[in-house]
Structures are given as structure tokens and as C-alpha cells.
Length: 428
Image 1: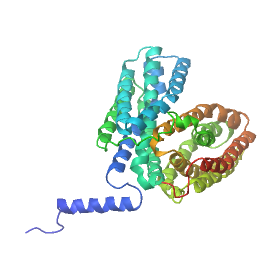
Image 2 (image 1 turned 135 degrees about the vertical axis):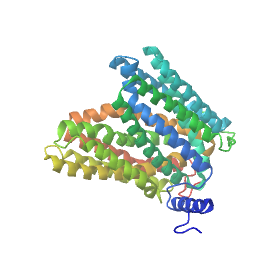
Image 3 (image 1 turned 45 degrees about the vertical axis):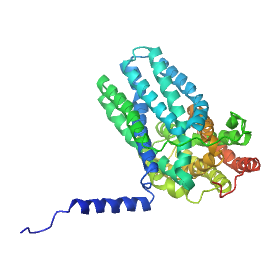
Image 4 (image 1 turned 120 degrees about the vertical axis):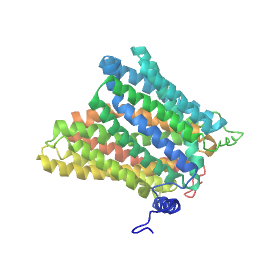
């Protein structure tokens, strides 16, 4: 006869696991079992490896391939510019032939190009490997758009917000992994990281192959081939929204330089600020997206975010000259305000990105959207460096004013878009 506590049976353990999963689903921390959860898992694995690679890759090029810093910057610039051109045509292919197969192909290409980087021994090999990787990555993003639209069903904004939280969490873990590799700082460590990143593309493909093969939606007879590029309201939305996405570089690029060069705050505050921002985005993005449905509410959320960015950046700017701990407190308030703006902007942007695009051309529109974001991310360091770091407080206020102006104009652009398409607040 046994005494004391009995061990749980397998069925009991399974019931506990089901209860936990059910609680996570109810709280919005996990999608319902099925295609949405598979797509989220594939995205997490992909972003985990990519974030780790991007953080350590410049040092790999410098220390292992032994390229001069100028060639590293040039190679990455060439790859980034080349990557911008792939999204639109590949997105069009995803619309015409089905998104899953095209997305899987881009993942396999990235796996091969990443593996080839292990054997790079010259500048041109490095450039080719990185260019193919960026081309396939941009193309994959365009092909992923229709998958999100189709699998998200009636809750596309909610699902997209969840995917953003997952990507943010994966990026954090990837950065931590890269930190370990950089600390080890050996050729073997860098090569292992690159190999693991190559394998994450294969792992993501293994998950995505279980998704249903979505048939392409029929194109209207009167629709031209490059409808997204001819859609003037959408192109203006991409421009304004791209400007707003520069906010993503404020905390990761401008703030660290501001802390080190213009304040008496301890340098560890940079890591704390990014950690606080990450935690808030992971846990609050879905909540911030609730109710942001339709063109009117989405554009209002973006307008509201512009004012939050201005106030947050003004607060951060006042930390210059303040004593160390006072500067920490001041900038933490600024980071919190900036993060609130980030949450509102992402909620509105993700809603409009999918609502403004016709379902049959979602891939092509995703390519245009990605190109706009890529261009703005490319100019963000130079712009923020000039305004926020070189000009100081007036530059912070000017950049915040640019965010306000872009956000203020957004509702008018959405009204313009509404006159050229069916964009009701209860749109599909």
C-alpha cells in the first residue's frame, strides 16, 4: 500500500497542460491551436536566429572574414538596397500562385545563402551572400503578408499584434544569444551562430509546410498587374507610415548615444530602457490593438501616437545636464511615453496595412509596405544622428514634430483612400 501523495497520471498531467493552454488562449497569450499557432511558431524560430545573426554579423565580417570596416558597411548597404526591390514582384507571385509555396522557397534560399557565408573569404563573396539573404528575406516578408491576412480571418489586427509581440520576444532572446557569442569572440563561436541561424530557416520551413496550401484568390478582370504601385492613397500611407516607423530607432539608436554623450546617467541605463520597452510591447501590444478596427480608429491611433512621441522625446531631451539618477528617472518617463506611442502606432499601422490592401493583391501590397519601411529604416540612423545627437534638444523636438505632422496627416490620407475603395469601419 502506498503512502503520501500519489504521482499524477499521464492523463492528469495532460489535463493540467490543457488547462494552462486554455488559460493562455483566453488571455490572448497564445493563438488557438491550428494554423495561426504554427505561423507564430515559425515566426518565432525565424526571428530568434535572425536577431542573433544581425547582432553578431558585423563582428564576424571584421574578425573572421577580416574585412575592413568600410567594406563591411558598404557590403551591408548594397545588400539592404538590393533587398528592397524583391518584395513587390515576389509578393505578386505569392498572390498569383499561392503564398505558402513562395514563402517556403524564400526560407530555403535564405538557408543556403546563410550557409554559404560560412565559406566567405572575400569581400565579393560576403556581398553576394548577404545580398541573396536580404533579397530572400524581403521576398519572404511579402509572401508572409497574404498568409497573415488569410489565416487571421476576421481578427487580422489581433493576430498581427500577437505576431509582433512574438517577434519582439524572439529578438530579445536572439540579442542575448548574440551577446554570449560576442563575449566568447572566437571564429568557432561566430560560425556556430551562423549555422544555427541557417538551421532556423529550415526549422521554420518544416513548421510552415504543415499549413494548408492556400489557393490564390481570383484577380478582377480590370485589375492591372502592378495595382499597388498605382494606388496613390496607399503609396502616401506608406510614406507617412514609414516616417512614423523611424520611432523604432529612437530607443535603439538615438537614446544610447544620447545617454553616453549628453547625460550623466550610467551606461547600464541603455539596457534597462530597451528591456522595459521590450516587456511593455510583449505584454501590451495586443491590449493596445483592441478596438482599433477600421480606417477611422486606426488613423486616430496613429495621430495619437505622434503626440506621444513628441512628449516622450521632449522629456528625454531634458535629461541633458541633470544629475545621474535624476537623468535616469527623467529618461525612464520618456521611454514609457515613447513606448505608449509605439503601441498606438503599431496598432493603427498594422490595421491599415491589411485593411487598405485588397485581399487578392495582399502580397504585392505587403511588398510595397516593406519597401517603405526599409527605406525609412535606412535613413533613420543618419536623420536621428543629425537631429537628436548633433543638434541636441532642438533636434529632439524637431524629430518629435515630424512624428506629429505625419500622424496628423494620416486621417486625411485614409479618408482619401476611403473615397477610392470600400473602407468601412467594419471592413473584412
